Each structure stands twice: as C-alpha cells, then as structure tokens.
Image (cartoon, rainbow, N blue to C red; front, side, top):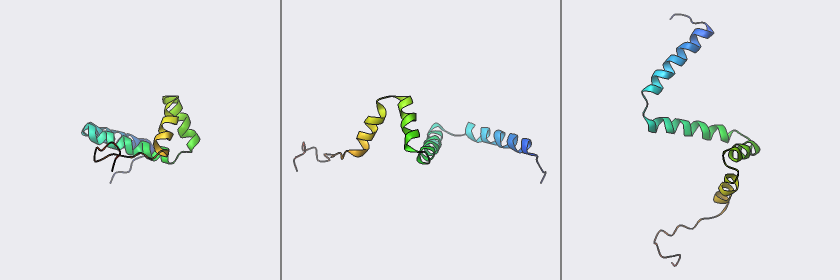
Length: 83
C-alpha cells in the first residue's frame, strides 16, 4: 500500500466522501444529518442548546420544554376523553 502524507490522506477522504454522498438518496442524507445533530446536541450543555434554539426562534425553547414536560393524553379510541 502506498503511504500518504497527511494532506494526501485528507484529500483522499474528501474525494471518497463526495462520491459516497453523491450516491445517497435524500432519505439517507436526512437520517445521517439527524443522527449527527442529535449526537452533537446530546453531548452539549443545556445552556448551549437553549442558545441554539433561541437563535433559531426566541419562543421555541419554551414551547419545546412545555412539549417534553407535559403529559399528553392520546385518545386512540376517539371518545373525546371518555373511557
């Protein structure tokens, strides 16, 4: 195997990644980006996450916190909440 210096290795990786990405469908690309973003934010401090969300939309953080902290009852029988 031919030995590559650091710059050549970087270029080899870039070229290969471009070929792989060019051959992916949108669904696969979305899955990869979703996984990477979830992993990135999972490793982040909550203050950083809040700042990121606030930069996206100033009201979104409170809405999302409300979504994850309130129990939602799903009426699977469509009975209007009557069992």
